[in-house]
Length: 210
Length: 205
Image 1 (cartoon, rainbow over the protein chains, first blue to last red):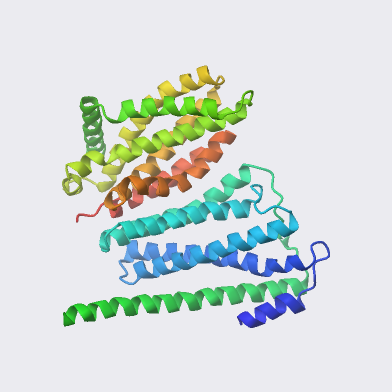
Image 2: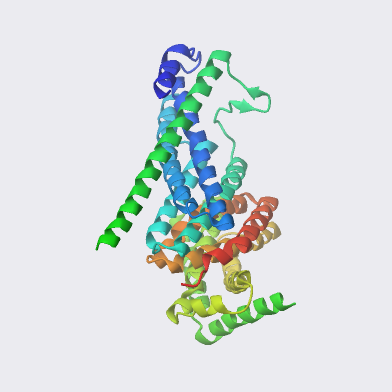
């Protein structure tokens, strides 16, 4: 799926008349960003499950989703910065709301790890992480509005209220890339989750043996 | 109303403690004046009012952070957290009372800071004062919750700025831009969230 997405992005989608080849980074940058949102949303959903239903698996699942979200978020920052360099000539533009929003979220969710690793494992840590994850998901729209308020923006708005402003081939490629990215997240998520669970059961076994 | 009585009793305890020990408020006052002095020299001569207004906001957020770091110190040093959690009251009352006492400290610090700013830099108008008041509510609501999280960790004083500053970015944006409705929205949204989730943050150990 990912290979197909790469192939489509490079060979199938028409080259942008205005930006040329560099526009193709769009097919990675935007799906990466959307996937990062999906990760944070999924993490917050699991956090809510933890607090509400006392689902014993939810804490670890929430952590893994946010961990993946930070990785995808960091990649979004890098690809966004590259794209900004190529098309606007600067590495960083404060007037691009999406980039600034990702910087805010990146800072916020990095602190999530600081919080998690500074508290002893246990129900208290699970609760705090969950509450923090919920704050994160509320912070996304709030920061977005704040950043949009704060300046004039030059970030291209592809999805306006009139639907996506893309040609059919571009939109198809975009959808495939988005699906591939989400699938990549799902795979990495289940791999990391399986690894963590294995780790936990191994530790239990060791304690039983000792 | 027993809830409001609980809140009043808890807040009274914090204020009384501060009145006797005088630890937090003098520190906040000195800090905010020192910060404004530093900012005066950090700014190039002849910078406009907008730039200095931005500095006022950074000074206020940092001062609030200083107060918030101290907010749960008494409970931690006397290991009173468990006792506080075990008191027969709604746990969100603890949050509300703590937020109120931090708010009182912050407002006291601002009573000095805003005139000092007006003298050092430029005059401030009513809308700035309103924005500061609204921002205070949000800062205290979010900061108190994060403060309770931070004291549970090993890093403590180190952790709170990391947790709090990213969440305070919208406050600074709204404050510098003078978007009062946005600050009010932030307050309502995060105060409700903090009020609802605080009981999960303080669990008996």
